[in-house]
Length: 378
Ligand code: DAH
Image (cartoon, rainbow, N blue to C red):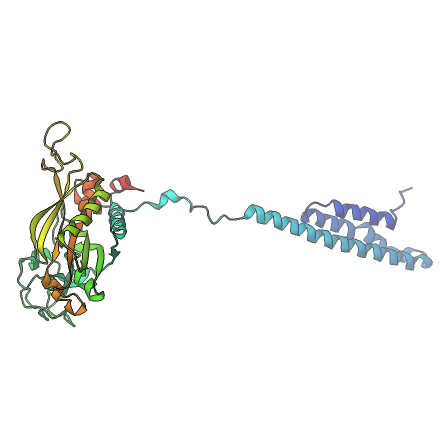
């Protein structure tokens, strides 16, 4: 004789235990099928109620429905609890730490040595109270030459140095469209617009934009028709300009001494040599004491130091006191040459980088040979 089927009370009791014991949403789904599915004992029992003697059908039907409703409620409750637990666990393990570095950081490359050097130079001058400005690489002849006291016909305007941009038939030596009175509204002559040959045009542009006192440096690209081991058609300069009421050449020397010591070491000295630039008066070339031989001119082997060619000094830039004629172009902006004066300087970023790192050929900077560039990666 087969075992007697489990009583409703037993089914309910067993169901409660199974629901409580389920440890995951997958398990609780199995339990649900086992307790309330089509083949579940409770379902089978409900289906067979019609076979019972009529006087028992009502009671058994009621009890079966109650047991089913109780189990369904317990199942729903446990399912929700398990779902919540699993969500919490997933959130804890899947969490993305947005503060971790990108992956992989080393494959991003590094700053070009010229960019690194430019930033170091900027840091020094910002520390001395200068602001950093940038200016246009495509420039009017007016700012590049005329307003910097290069009168028309001055040798520095000669075509072999400069990339001129605007077309037209006007011969290069024709007078500028707007002699001395500002840049032309509409450039016409083929010499009116050019690739700036130096960052110096920003001297006048900066003074047009700001009344004195002014302390600015201007890093940027510059262009000349030139190409050999120490010249490339595109190169970088940093211009400096300081105009105030009591500025002397000693201020220039002090600023450049601080610069030289920051970039080339605390032992450095600077020396000013007389020179000529159209837009400064007096003009100087600035040397720093040689950082390789310590200024003695003697190499460790007793011979002549090759870096400074035995002189103990290395030329690093051009500078001078701003010519009153230049201030005359911005006199209406408060640059009265009788009241304010100041200094300007201009240096080549490549030259500074080559000196510091012993780079023998300027063209290496722009050939994009990763073996060269990676040596300065940081
Ligand atoms: N602009 C000059 C050049 O490219 C460098 C220079 C010299 C800039 C003297 C200056 C300066 O501001 O005062 O050769």
